[in-house]
Image (cartoon, rainbow over all chains, first blue to last red; front, side):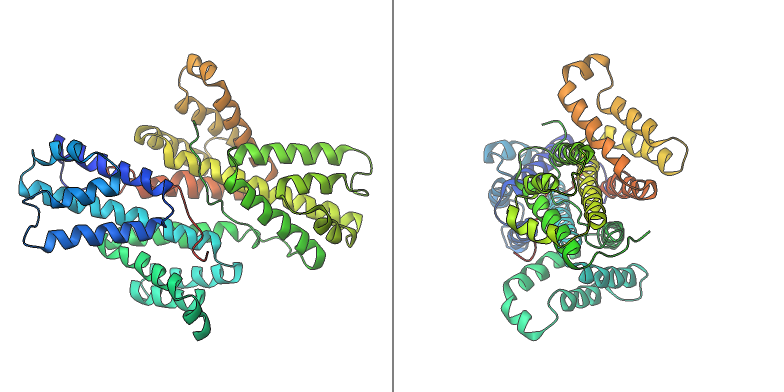
Length: 209
Length: 209
């Protein structure tokens, strides 16, 4: 994901939006993957429209996503060529997708019941070894998390959220997605298997605060 | 490396305390590694008192750390032999040490600056490969985060907390600590290197809530 170097204005814009998004994600009552999904969908809709990136419609979405002042973002935005804007927006989408997907994977590694974690580890290993595709892995995991038809009906809202979260992978390079699966669904679950009742913490407060 | 599974009232007590502790830890304003250190010290001191496992002194500490009702824990406690009580308490201390240390390692991998993260990863690799001891790694990382004596003096509170957090390793098997360092300080940091922004989520809300 380390693409070509960005100009100063492009890099400033990228950092402001991504770090702002990360910060607001931490304080939002909406789950990180739902936030990522919603903002990416908004950005993509504007990108595809006739307005595309020539105007500043997308800045409204970026300001909302990052909680950074619109004017502050516009100062950087106005300095960018259309190609640079495309590149920055692409990098923002990747970062948002990355944060949302990692949070969802971590959540599964933390909260799934112990026997489900073992099953998920087995499925993730099949994907990691390229024995099944990403979509097959997602579908198999869904059946592990909500195995019966009754559960699927009852927990439809969570299933929808799970599907949205896992679909964020489409905005990321395959190698990165594989590395994420390896860390969260293989390494982290394996770490908890020392005692199958253990749980990885879900909070990581700032060290120096 | 798997531990013998707990059963019956021992399992019930373990689950109540550990899950209760996790919930408490998630909502506490005190960092998880400081909380874990505090309660393990408290448990240790209580266990040093003669006949501590015969009465309810240990249960009082377990109530404080889990916020589970005293009578609920006592119901399980009464059903256990003195030997079983000792075993469960030791398993609880290990689980709590695991959570505290994981959170501290994860926090460093999430919040340090990119340069510090790279340095920390380099030191962690030396430990992982058996080139330096755990204590040497702890000391080298401390010097990365607080490079000057002046900084250490000024920020003594965080330095103390860092030392307390890292000392939780003494309650865990060496091989497990090595694996934890491998996951949090090597794999988590490496995952962030795919992006120049080093973005990484710090929250993992419960998927199924």
